[in-house]
Image (cartoon, rainbow, N blue to C red; front, side, top):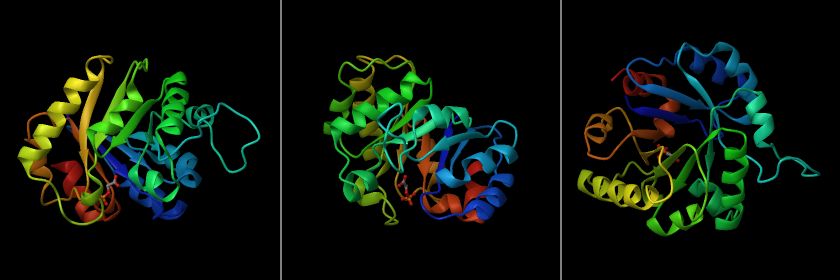
Length: 218
Ligand code: PGA
């Protein structure tokens, strides 16, 4: 069973998120949708059987005077099972660095939510040093492949997944390594059969109904 995660980024409002969530199914794979914060509670109400809810971001703190932030506890209350942490768009545009990403991972794990920890290279795995995690998803997302229509060769994906696996298994037992970056209905099949790939994180193609349908239905 593969893990298929939709990252709707800042694309869909509440109505559009509800409509797409209703058309999202979890058949032979495990499907997760990560709408924007504003749509989480409404999307939760319409999720089809087996489809899980995820968030795109989280605060590094449990609570406090942090205007505009959303805590892991709040996401847990809404029924989130996954949270994306360390996405390259946040690293780039919001200058999120290893320190804050590590604190976010800890905050998420403390609430028994599974982090989807995004890395674009092996160096970024340093954040996991000495981190105690019951469950983890590592998403290998080369920055140049995000939203560009370009993807690495399957050999490159397999090689990176193997290296990530070797590094993560030193400290964490229960983890999956997924690929992200320009995944669509045309490349999903070959990505799925690539050795070491446990699933995919899908951005742009997850908000287009036809592409998304093909991806989740296989
Ligand atoms: P993309 O985005 O599929 O649009 O390239 C993936 C991601 O940013 O997670």
